[in-house]
Amino acid sequence: MPAHASAALIHRTANIQDPPEFPSGDPGMLLSFSLVHGLIFGGGVTGYLLLFMVSTSPRIWGYQDYPDRVKKKVPPQMRRERTLAGIYGVPFILFGLAFPVYSVLELRVGLGGATPFADAFIHLLILLALSTLGDLVLLD
Image (cartoon, rainbow, N blue to C red):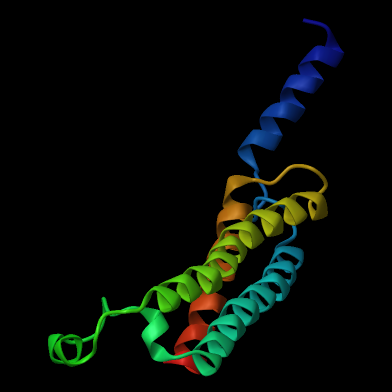
């Protein structure tokens, strides 16, 4: 075996045995990126729901979660209320599905084209945790 081939094999083997502690090699970049995007996502979701709750009638929300006593006393939703629920719900669902995809694609660009699965998972975990935290603190 030529000397340069054995040196390359040793170098490759050394890299396999000593992986970086963090998949992307830069936990600070991932954390700061995830926090910024998580605050944008959490603020967008929570702010939209808060505006929706304040500006519309509670009848638009539907009655699935209400106790049976309330359901018996309140008449069914009118067609206009169901339509408004759909009109307000579509942008919320689109933002909730599209922003995490956009955010992971931006993370990919920030990491230089390759996003390890662990980085994408940690990023989405932080993104959704901040959204849930905003819902818990502001809405509940």
